[in-house]
Image (tube, rainbow, N blue to C red; front, side, top):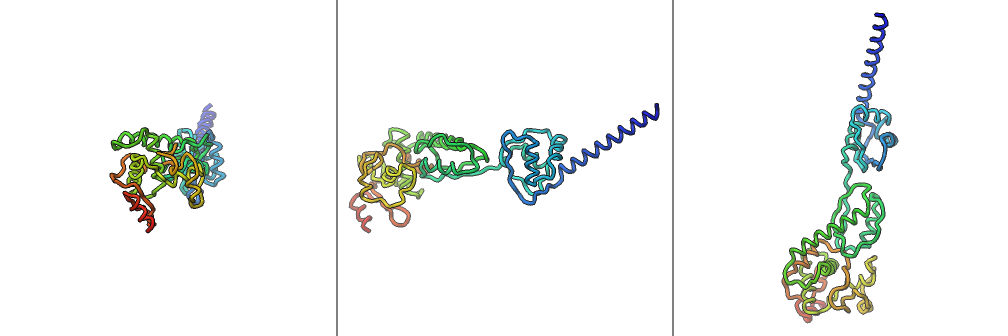
Length: 317
């Protein structure tokens, strides 16, 4: 009987020691440097299992053994769900550090800058061309409803979610600026302010000129003069779907469209682009001036004048 008891104890102790050795060996493998030679990115698909992730890591030569990776997770991790997204993995990262990154949800952040003055069609085309976004855009948003800014997103975010954010940010900004606007402006609605801001945006790329350009148009509106803005003619021809790719000619100025401010009174029916923050501020806080005219000065800016005679002299020069 004693011999049987001693044998049982020996077997049990040997098994315990073997188990301790195996666990120690797995831990050593789980925490040692990995085979990755240079920094890389790794994407976890939604709903991916631990087995699938381990096999993908092994195939990409980020870890040596997917089975040991899975065992390491079960023994030394709380097995939190691996969060969907794109992750940056540093060279020589251990399986343990990789698991921590995946469980933290610290995905890589991408940026996407939308330039001021793009039309909604142009913005949608740019977003559709981003391969690190997913899904479709259900429809082109209304002109002037998107805020040009730098936006941040994670790999796999939907294109429609980015459009939704741009619309939300524009609505929030213009509501705030409208509440703080100068008194006595000739706008009956926020929409009219956005329309004029889109024209100002297309007329000048110089931030310091925008309030002056806005003031010229506002002076014209108050006096009942036509705006006579070339960008509105271009929009009437292209419908915001691309560049005109040529200079305007006399026949263009005579072409009847709802946007031709050489022929229509007041503002066109919709914005002609998506104005940025500074253009919106400019029309709601225009410069105090008596100018009614401006023309390109050949140096990247514009020359302003109060009278048609003074304007024509500048044009001749």
